Image (cartoon, rainbow over all chains, first blue to last red; front, side):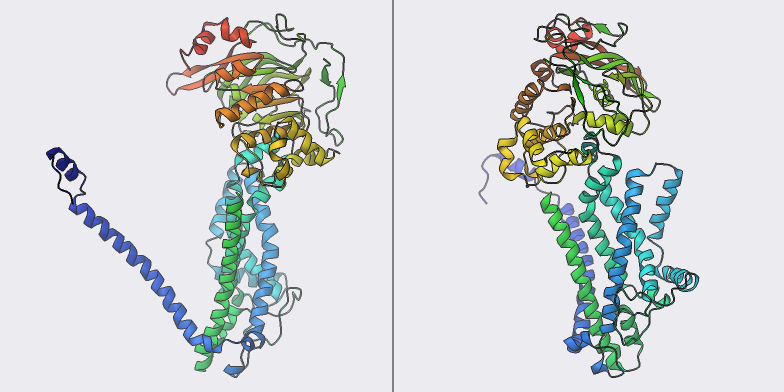
Length: 301
Length: 315
């Protein structure tokens, strides 16, 4: 440091120095926050390393293309994979029109009164209901009352009920994010409120709606409890397809549960871990899709 | 100069997408305004107007119009005429209700919950607020440009075809796009990039696109709510030139905070003021002080309040 010659300069330099106590407190807080982040990260890394170490050896093309077997080495998750993909397809098909329709109505057309406020509060609360409750609902309504039995459509409808509140809430947020000015511009051209909603507001909101939908779908395909209650089977030696609605079905999380329950250690550790890797890869693909859609939308703005 | 009179009712009918205008020679529509109310400097029947084609028709006749939001008045007892193919400017301090009044002309206030318009606004002698008048139909005939440029987040081309599409106009879209862009003095700048997103344009270009978009549905009147307040001086100059150009074919009503702008572009100016309703909570409502030829309002206003505002003593 160059020594300062004038006394005034020295005083100025001193007055800008942070008090020692402040600096220490600042550093300490940052350190604590860093530790908190690390804990989450360490848990995640441990989980990944553990599962990959146990399951990587069991992963092969055969694992994806074979049905379950009593012999661990011959076991695969073909039934679960087709089941999960079929469920995903059906849930998306059912959720998009229902969720977006409800959100569009509530956000663009519903009068603001006690009744709609009540409706909104209920939807928000439904998003927090434990998933097994939806399973019980699916069991009583779809399996028994409507007589769909323990079939693929029962599973799809149950998961649809589960994700619908989340999709409605996310879609409403998406509609609310569309600037008021766009609606004004449409209305000023003599478009009806419905035309504005369908041709301007909805397209502008679709990227965020899709993002929300994919994220809630990825939650749905990881769910075990509701479809377990609503009749998914543990072992099935046939493919599921979205158009075979009345067939029995299984899904990857159900199969994982099945593998872990078996007495043999090869199943409990090796096969189950391999299935977990497949499930996580699927989730990763879906979440990446959501991020890509969001980014593309952000770039277009 | 021929006179355009829209003789068709504004009620909803499937085939009325495109307004039919009857050229009716030069018969002037009589003014519907009452002589009571605010101070009139030079008005009705265009006497004393120094512009050619002085005997202009009246497009809007507002009679004793008040607007309330809930129980709070926003604007009270406004009576004035808007003349055909002129630029009428509304000026006044914040909270004087000039934007609120503008929104009465295409019934945009209907979209605000709790807003209530009383009095009478005639559009070519047809009451805009009559029971059987459809607000959507009104907005088809009376275009609007907003304070902030609000293009749709779509291509330039799609921005311009939306209006004709929703109005089921049987027109050649390419032609509408080119004509409206040319009229809005934007064609040369964007003709090579019609498929580009409208958000890629500059603010001034976006605003001209919004004006072009308003023109696509062939309105008779264009309402402009502070169209230049979000723009820089050069873009503002562009818009003002454009307004001067459009005046030959359209009736324009502009709300502006910028007195110089009103002086530069408008033929007639209406000055509104804000009156304090109650001292306790500083609630205000607007009132029309006077309306007259712009040159007169700015050089020799009738009302003391106008003079004070123009000379910068308040507002």
